[in-house]
Image (cartoon, rainbow, N blue to C red):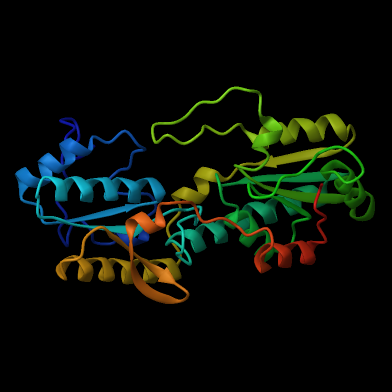
Length: 314
C-alpha cells in the first residue's frame, strides 16, 4: 500500500536511517496483509523509474511479488522483482528455513519453560501453550523438542481426537497420575476440524480465519479435569516483537546480499533461500504452489513423539 496510498509516504532508506535496525524487533517500513492493488503498484514502479524491487514476505508476499513481476512483463515495465522468504511459520516450500524462525523457536521455549514451572508448582497443574503455525507446526515441533518439557504436541498436520481410550484427555490423565502435572503445546492451526461449526470466513489475503484452539482446549481441560489448575499462555506477539538472534541476523544478511546480486544480474521473478544447506535462486511460482508442512511420517515429527512418548490420539 505504500506505493499508492496517499496517507502512507515512501520511506527513503539511507545508511543513517537503517543504522542499528538489525538490533530491533518489528519493521521500520510497516507491514500489511493482502488486498494490494497490483495494477497501481506497477503503475508507480513505471512512473518512479524503479528497476529493482525486493519483496520481503511469506507465501502471500511472494505471491504478490509473482503477480507484480507478471504485470511488469505484460506492460513491458523493466523491473527486476526478487523475493526474500520471511515466514515465521517456516512454511515456504523447498526452503530449509526462513530468517526469524530460529528466533521464534528460541522465544517459544521461554513460554514452554514458564508453563512447566507453573504447572509443576500447582497441584495437578496443566500448562497449555499456544504457538504460531497456521498450516505448519514447525515452531511447535522444534520448540517442544528443544525445551524437553512438553508432554503432548498438537500440530495442523496431524488430526487428533479428544475423548475415548486413545484420546488426548485420557493420555493427559495418565501423565497427571504419573507426574502430577503436564505441559501441552498446540499450534494455532491444529484441531480446526474439531472446532468446525459450519461457518467460514477469510482475511484480506484470502486465508481462512482460524477458530481459537487455545481457548477451546482451555475450556475442555477445565470441564474434564475438575480439580486441575490450568495455566494458559499465548506468547504470539511477544515472539513476533523481539529482536532476532545472531544466527538469524547473519542469515538475513546473506539472503539480502544474494537478492541484490540476483537483481544486478538481471534475474527477475525469483526468491532466494537455503535449500539442502545451499544458497540458491528459485522461481517464485515453484515456492508458492503449496505450503511447506511437517511430514507426519518424517523423522522430525516421529523423533519428537519418541522423545516425549506421545501416542497418535486416533
